[in-house]
Amino acid sequence: MINADKLRNAFGALAATMTEQRDYLIKLDQRNGDGDLGISMADGYTASSAALNTSPETDLGKLFICAGKAFNEAAPSSLGTITSLCLMGMAKTLKGHDEANAGLLGEALMAGIEKVMEKAGSKPGEKTILDAVVPAAEALRDNADAGDKAAFAAAAEAAAKGSAATADMPAVHGRAAYYGEKSVGLIDGGAEVGRLLFETLAKNAVENSERIADSEMYDCKHRMKADR
Image (cartoon, rainbow, N blue to C red; front, side):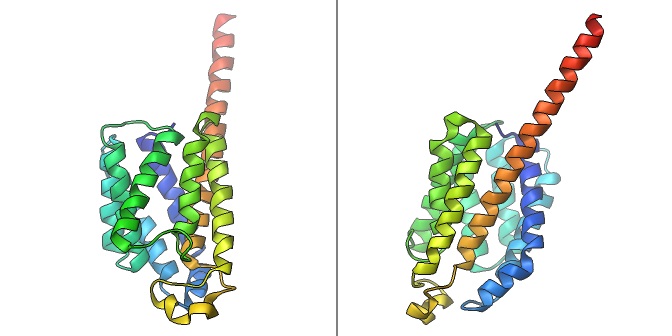
């Protein structure tokens, strides 16, 4: 179950990951793009994290709007705009919720993705971030009953497979489309962002689970001592 504090923690982890992987993403993007992917993702997630940390909101929908606006201002790139659209699309589903499980998050993410596909005129199979995040969102939603930890692990695995699969696809969008069949054999940078995103969220879910377990263990020991 995610709430405002856990959302802030997750965006902090994403900002750290994108900053750490900044140069890797730049190198990926330089092969058939503008080379600014690592910069825009690091700047975007850092700005979103900072905005969430200064917001007193607990409504997840309003927090996603806050994150989306901050991302858009900090990362005026194609993937920056796509990410902002997705975050804003998620906000509509999450409006009025102070908590959300993996199932609701998966539904919200699919709503955000559908908004992106509508605006960008793109779909999975075209060597974009969608090839990683669509199967990840589906896995998150479909594995919700197994708990957040298992659901995010399944989503991370799906995103990794989706990203790897882009190596077999020709690019059809953006500057990479100019390379056409020459882009076959190269993993899409946007799809790698999707992989890194869900890999980070899966690790974050494990850490949240461990913190909860440690807290419950502490409370149990404290009660046992009080009962003596």
